[in-house]
Amino acid sequence: MDNVFSIINEAFKLSRQEATTEQAYQMVEELLRQDNLSTTYHLTFAWIAYRRLKARYRQIGSREARRGLAEYFRLQTERPSVLHSSFLYLAINIKKEYADFQFIKFLRMWGPENFREDDWVPFQAEQATIMSLAQKTIYQAMAELKNGASPEELVMMNQLLSQAVRRYPKTAEHQRQLGMVLVRQGLRDEAIQAYKQALLCERKAYFWNELAELTDDTKLRKGALCMALTAQRNDDFVGAIHLRLAEMLILEGDHAQALFDLGKVYTTYSQHGWKIPADYYRLMTLIPKEMTAAKRDYKWLERMAQPAADFLLDDLPQAVFLVERFFTSKKGQEMVALRDCKGKPVVMPKKKLKTREPLLPGSFVKARMKQTLPHQTELLSPTIATEEEVSLLFGKAVSITGKLLIKQNAAGKAFAFVKNCYVGAPLLDGLNNGQIVSVTAIEKDGKTTAIQKPEPTSATTA
Image (cartoon, rainbow, N blue to C red; front, side):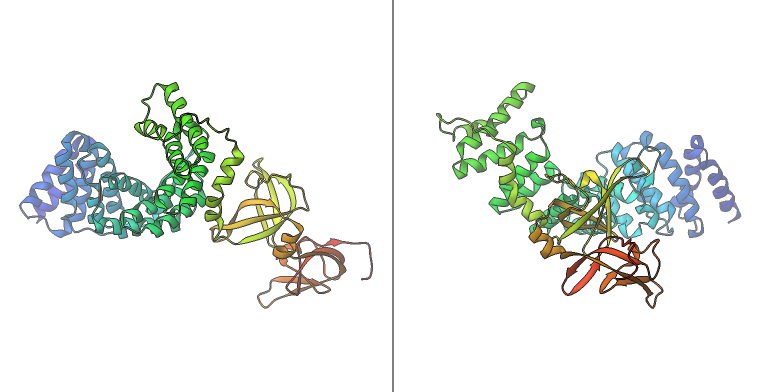
């Protein structure tokens, strides 16, 4: 036993140097082969094996690299652990080196339940954010999934991606990946909902195109294809979308618009010297010879895309917000401050609140609300609210002047009233109890709520 300890100890020291990792591994591997390695030393041997494999996987070939990974699973080591995560990271690199390595099968043996909390945390470098180990694992597994996967592997990926979309609610690609897995599982309706969530994060052309492939709703399919064309204006990347839209338009009898799409395909492919797709010639035979291509504008695409826009937003709550002010952040970014009908502030970059009409302080904006994080809301599809929408969704705007009476609730949080108007804590900064103030408020459902900070007045009574 003392001799085994000496060998293990010497091998562990040698494994710290890249040049002697192979020598260290051979010293201990012989003991394992002879079944003369106590479980007491399994952790030490696992680190020796890891260092050797990390240093030499490119030189030893696919078979030996795969054997090294399989050997690790014979060892009794703690899981989850830094070592266990290190072997997964190594497996990702081995897959990049050797195409015949079946990474998804390795992942099943490794066990996604063994991700540590640290494995989910992206690394923040100086110039960029580097994906977490869990994310890198997902991308590697999804790349292999294209070649097929067993039902058990699909269940594993579904569970892993479901956790990923909860942890990274703003990462559209994980929602899309979940949709792709759900399609493989035959869960088409659930897949469509996953794509919907992806599109609420990022409205990418290929997201819309893949949604169009999934749905049996012809209006939604056509709308999704039109949305794809509004999302990607470079015709170099949307040839297949133009062809699919042209086929739908031909079936509807709109040959002039279909000819517009086919013309886009022919022009783009000819300019680059690409081979014209066979579908182009097939669809051209369905167009009357005397037909002239339509002149399409952006408004036509918007009209045709409306069913897709409705599909995307119909489940999201709608509200009206008061535009309070515009300001520049410390980082030099133009920002806009708004308040909802309860006086709750919403601050966001001005570029994310684009409306056709100019926005001014005091105007009201109607938008759909998407919660991206527990305390963060994104406003989608904003428009200037009409008086009727303000009254219905926000309430009747009123001005009230009176004495500010500040109180505290049981938890010690401040609130106030001006006559019958409730003033929340965020609006009370810098104000004193008993001041005469004027406040802009909203009357709705029998309640009056301040939506702007009360302004002290020169009046002495109210």
